[in-house]
Each structure stands twice: as C-alpha cells, then as structure tokens.
Length: 469
Image (cartoon, rainbow, N blue to C red):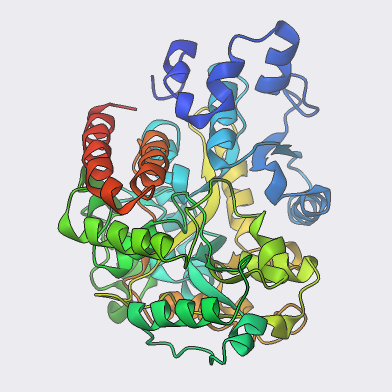
C-alpha cells in the first residue's frame, strides 16, 4: 500500500474487514455503488464527509449540514452515510473508495481505526491545532486528556474526539429487587460481582441469564483484562505530544501522557490473561453467564429490558437504546466495572480523520472544528445514543428522561480513573480483533479449552503483528 493510493491487491489483504474484499470482484454497476462514484456531490467541488450509516441517520446529517452552512456558506458540504454492519465493514468500504480514487475528504473513525488511518491514510492535525490554539482552548478544557491521547499516533494528533463510550456495568433494577440485592458501591470487587450473579440466579427462573456479554473487541473480554492489570497486547506510550499537553492541559492532567498508545507484543499466554479466561469459563460452567455471542449487542436490549438478563457491560449509548426500547429510566442503573487487581476501565472514542488524498484540507479542518463544538454536539446527540466527549454536556437535564440515575458514572469513568484507556487497536486491528473473537469462543467452550486456545491465540497474534498493514 502506498500512503495515498492502495491497490486492489493490497485491499484484498483486508479480508477481515468483511465486505470490502469480497466486493472487489463485483460487476461494474456494483463497483460504482461501492466506490461512491454514483453518489450526488462527487466531483462538484463539495467537501465530502463519510460517516457510519447506522450512527448517523437523515436527521443527524441534516443537522450537521445546515449548521455548517450557516457558519461557512462558501463551502459546499456533502455527508455520505455509508451503510455498514460494523466499524470493520465501514472501514473496508472506505478503503475500497480510496483504491478507486473516489475517497471522501473526511471519515468518521472510531478507536478501532485510528492508528490504521493515521499510519496509512490520515493527515496529522498538529499545524492547524497550533495555529488555532486560542480558539481550541475551550474545547480541550472540556475534553478529558485520555480521549485526546487515544487520537494521537507517534506524537501527532489525528482526530478531535467528539464522543466515547466506556464499558461500564448496567444493572436491571427489577432483577436486583427480585434477588434482594442493593445497587453496588463504586469500589465493588470481582468477588462482589460473582456473589451478585449467584444471588440473581437463585431468585430467577431457568430462562434467566445473570450476566450476558458480547464477544467483540470493545466490551468483551478486554475490560476484564484491564481489571486484572493486563492487556491482549503489551501497551506503552509513544514519545512526544508535549506540544499539545503543555499548551492545553495543566500539569496534573497531562502528567504521564505521551504521543499516543503503542500496542506491540502479544501476551495471550500471560498468567493474568489466563486468569481472566479461567474466571469467565467458571461463570459459564456455573450457569452465571452464557458463552459470549458475536454481534454489536443490539439483540441484548430486548432480553435486558424484559428482565431476562441481570447485568451487562455497556456505555452511555445504552441509556438512549433502552429508553427507545420502552424501558423506564428507573428500570435500570449503571455502575463502574468491578475492581480486580485494578479498577482501570476501557473505552472507545470517535472523531473525524482527514485523508491525505483530500484537496480541500483547509475546508476539512473547518468542519473538524465545527463538529467538535458544544452547540453542534448538543444538537446532534439529543437521544443519548452515545457519551459526548465534552464533559460539560453531561448534566442531570440530559438524562432526566432516559436515565440512568447514576449518569455521572459515564464521564467519571475517566475523571475518577484517569488511567482508564482505549481498547487495544494497533494498525493491524482487523486481524487482531478477528483472532480474539475466534479464540475466545473456543477458549470458553470448556475449562479445559482455555490454555490450548490461548496458545493458539498467541501464535496467531504473533504472526498478525509481524505483518505490515
């Protein structure tokens, strides 16, 4: 892959992303659809922004477009909601557009793709951030430094985070009452969590699942790894970043920050990783949770809202999801992920990445700043479908209708636990995620499966991390 124009052959290596590679052999008509050649606004001088379709419906797109037009009537804007199953599928379709020479100017990128885009396709925002520092001071003062650090790569900033979601623990209050249990304290432990699951199981019928989780990179096994003081890949900090930290954050908030995260050596056979899988396997064996399912967790809303699941990890986005599913605000609550060796938690964030192929980089920067404004995000995030990156937006009024009662947990996951960090997402994230999902499912088939599955995971991860993306 070259920096700006990856070939079709190179894109075939992104098979783990799903639809992108398979679609390369399609008909001419499907190629136009895939690459965006038939999208209104192509080649008419518009600034083109690509977003993940399910995250941005027509109303959200209209809000972004109209607000930007008021500020910049001289910049034509086209927002394309790319329909995709998940982030991996979305990234594959963007990579296909790049290969076809029809790349957008900006792409909405989550943690899963930050380093992939930064390494191969993105433009560092450093020069604009330095130039417009006075204008951006208010933004950085309102955004936790951990979120900003997660958007850095090798000393440079590639995105301004606009939203995030940490893997906190949701609890069904109906199930808590049925089990005679109380809302857990902030410093609850893994053992407290296990006891709660046992109490829930005793008080409920055979169709009830105390703990349900989805097998994926965010919110799957990773938060348990963090809680046990470990990670799937060895984690460190890249040097640099002082230009940003010294300009926008006080010393007590920037201390220990660097130029972005590095995830390198696989450590799936580490004792603490094995401990986590042994613990989860014991929950499966004792009927306290099912083997994790794949997918994005949307199927979980129904079973949780009807009391067939007691506890599940989810982020601020679930407050809006449960409300839309008809669940009353006092029907559920949220608490921090339980402590094990640590109470470090994990999150994923998102923002707009500027592509090197863009010929409208100044206009694109103006959109990035606009999209990170508080008034923009207030109009955009009206249904609590996510957690705003701006701390000041989390207020009692925001959660008055949807709940939960302890909505402060969402941002306090960062403020009270400043070592909370992003999910491990190196440039090879597509293959890393697929391997994690595959071998986690195998590992939890039985208690005897854990060690052999982790050995295979280690070997496959070593091969994946050696490959250049």
